[in-house]
Image (tube, rainbow, N blue to C red; front, side, top):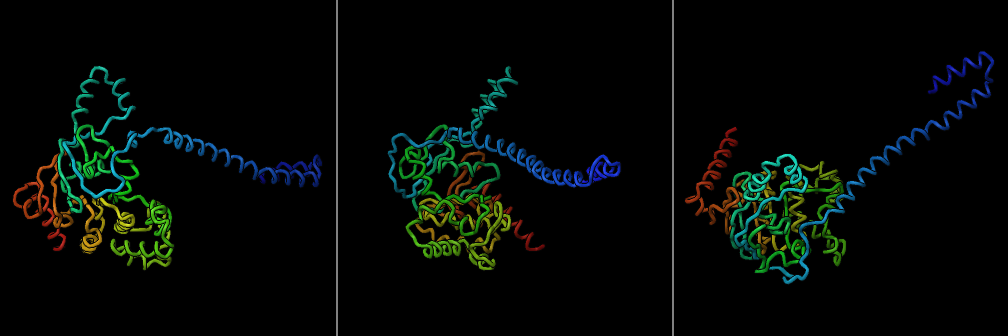
Length: 360
């Protein structure tokens, strides 16, 4: 733009059709309006993007959840940790969009599709009892519905058939806040925020710990971090627990993320503690140390551990072997290694893998 003004205006000054004063004045005006015009384009683009984002957020707010509080809660406010599955069947329901696509594009086969999906149970007639304070391991091949089982306990989904009981009460009779506040859930891929380590451990627990002083809260954070063996790593950071970890914890390793999530779950002192393959990125030596400390710290807490490593769950009070949505065997490690072919296959395969790793 400046070059164009200089060429055209300079030619007119030479020809005498424009004075130098007029040329300077015009150039100044161009300079005054250039940045506002650029900013206007940027603002328009920002508004368009913001409108789209706001529309998506509004769509989320308009969604009515399928999982709701009971109209008249009948269950107690305090949990002990007994869990029972009573002939539970579960399948994932089709979205309205998918149902519409089937109806429009597969008119001749829509009934066949519907029947096939309705009979495709992810969990099939599952029954078991877990007493309060027990340590239970769940093991099985990938896709056997291990995670789905534990997702049903905090009512992330409702089963289509059967009942899930906590302390003898149907979980549908508990207010969601009461049920979920008593359950600590650590996933394989924990969600972390672009905040400090301290804030991530405290996430969702601010109200619970509001009666404590800052120093008492800090001591609790350090205590749970020591149990999850995160504390020593944090001490190496220049800003310790005030270290910012970036979006989704990008500055932390996979194992550190999982240990931070374990510390977060322990901070609320839950009645039921669920680990969904939460040690997969932790090396075996650190895992043994964490499990040893957890055994002491979680005494009396109902603990459910899903793991692909037999070593993680072999000391459990009860181990459930899951295959294709069904319980194939239940028992202790010493019993299953003798009578369950799936468990034997998983165990010996892992032993062979460890031996090969040691040789390399």
